[in-house]
Length: 150
Image 1: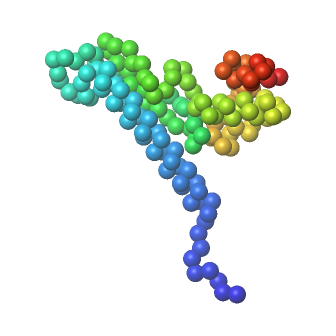
Image 2: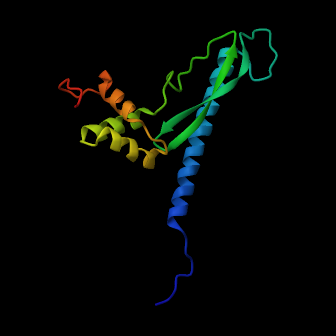
Image 3: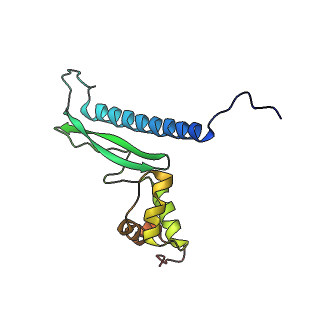
């Protein structure tokens, strides 16, 4: 048998692609938030205009768990206006599909403690057992017959 001419590490390539997707999502969300802030302020960053309605006051970071992993979101802060975004719901820490997957795991019989352990692998962030309990109690997570699960 002949030796392969080219060899590559499949796990490393998958890891690099996953990181590239995660970084692209993070950059896109942050760009969308900056654009929304520009529209609310009625001026771009550092732009001097007479019709400016507010001023930028930096940003604060939030973590958001997505199906591609944990991303750091730079939420703009404004002086003279309240920043309300359509990109991410207020107080949202996880993508809806991640929350649905957590609830599905629980409804399939996985214990809340085990969901906490298992969630680290696919999303890069674990969820507490209390979070699992809170998610299963939400009205939006009810099944067709009105049951809330267990």
